[in-house]
Image (spheres, rainbow, N blue to C red):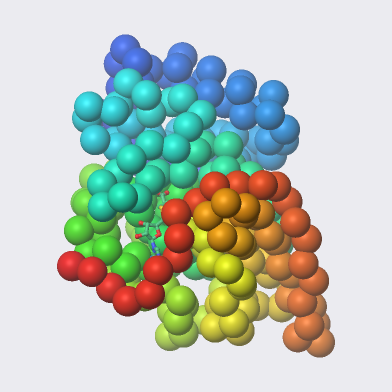
Length: 225
Ligand code: SAH
């Protein structure tokens, strides 16, 4: 799959945001076990420094989560890569993300040529994410809502990513997953969370696999402006 990225001039950053710094991050992800070259290529192409505050741009290519305001974070690149890699194993075309946040994970999915739907409960974060995605020419459909109900109008999805942690997998989301698709989500409480990959079988039953220990902000109810 060829990433369809249309980068604006400011995205081809200089200094701490240069291609060399991005290549170094990709090498690091490879050393940490990310094997899927299409995923590594998408991470190389998407300008993560444009998804954080300017004051943090020099840290954008470190393999670390960073604050994005409203007590939320842009996920660590390794986590984005691992979740995307797991999602792609279901050969998806149409995918749903719960927790748009900065818009970075959605941008990585769009760079892979996927049809992306994303839901965010904090209006201010969603407005900023939409602006960034638009500036990069990325076609991502988004909605301001409590993502625990999913986005039923466009279901089923070939893959679903949840980027905030809940004590258990959300049933509405499992229902909106297509047969053969994967739902990737952090499950657990603040002290102990695991990344879980759920696969929906032909007969509607599900198979669960634990991928890695992770740290995510909580999946909360309701919406905020
Ligand atoms: N994928 C994001 C990570 C953001 S952190 C990125 O790439 O930057 C998790 C996000 O999930 C936060 O923005 C938080 O507001 C959002 N969130 C938490 N609970 C939610 C819910 N019930 N519905 C939608 N979004 C939710």
